[in-house]
Length: 324
Image (cartoon, rainbow, N blue to C red; front, top):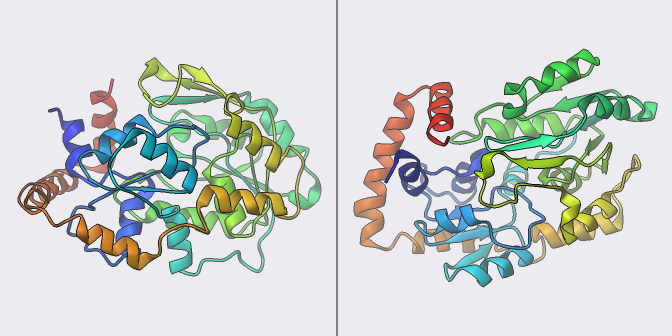
């Protein structure tokens, strides 16, 4: 077993601090390994993700966003599954985060890259599209994820005069990302992207109108290292992707429509998600095994120690190299 498998099996590796959010919301001890795996974002894919199936196998419990995702999970796995909705929404409600009274302009979340995924689109053309938005939607602020900043895409946006912000590079093991993300979102009246992503639903859930701008990007699977997607493709390759594009539209929108609200209900499980007490009980029930206390807990402490001994940027570099 290599170091990457050890990390995934014994250390809480949920993206964007989802594990810490759930522990906080459910009053579960930070000093214990989270006895579940959580979906890390919205997806238009019809099946359970291969990476989720692999990680959840060692956790024994899966948390998903909606009835659609629960059905997809049960077709592929016998591991128990609960509809929890997205952790970010739980965090927002717990901390009563709302749009500011002086919110202005639009925050753009360009389709983002990841360690093994490249989002390809003409940034120059996209900048022109954003500049052509009506005056009431300005100023436009660009919010990028760390992998795209690392690739130097922020320099292109800055060249066109846009302010570029980021929720930071600590996408695991910290609440910094979710806090910064909502600090950025809450001070804008509108949000946009060239692709429907989880940010679209976070915006609508807060009552912030979201709309599409620019041409749809092509997502490239670098070296086919992401097992969840094909070598390349677009959101519109999937039936739900086509529907999401139609629902959010390519016209600047000043209000959240009824259709968008219903789409949010369907995809974020607002009407069917379990309450916090139920989730907390399920977490504790999943710790009732000798293996959890004699294997998983000690290994969690060991992997946590290793993590704290290695500086964050160095850990990212090592993980990147090991994954090649």
